[in-house]
Image (cartoon, rainbow, N blue to C red):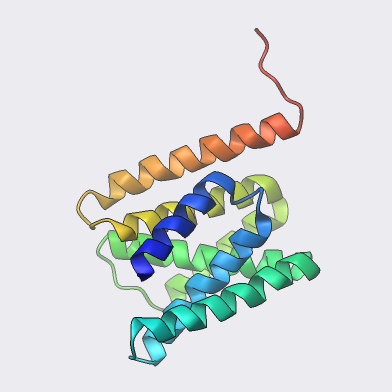
Length: 168
């Protein structure tokens, strides 16, 4: 069940992470809630999903009502998740330091390059979620292809919104 949720959420982030900002922030809360529940309560998957959903809803509401705070929190959490996921894909152990480094890098990116940072982070998070759904075999290549697709799709949507067109 959780794998299917990750697949849907990952696909949504790849396609519309910047456009649906509240979804991006809610997804960061959902992922963090599930990771927290899985680490501290070795219970069933249902409890992890419930904790993730509650955290996701809280974060999505923060995104709607307190956008500045939500941007920083979502940036930190998604960057922390992505760097941790990449470390696991590369066969490295993850710890709090890796988590914090990923979060800090992400907050800096979001602060200076908002639209492109959100596109990049939501594409990284979406690619990570989808790659986790499938096997680890070939995960790096699948991750890279999905990440590039997410950036291209969202980048072209941003260009269309800003009225930038290619000359013929």
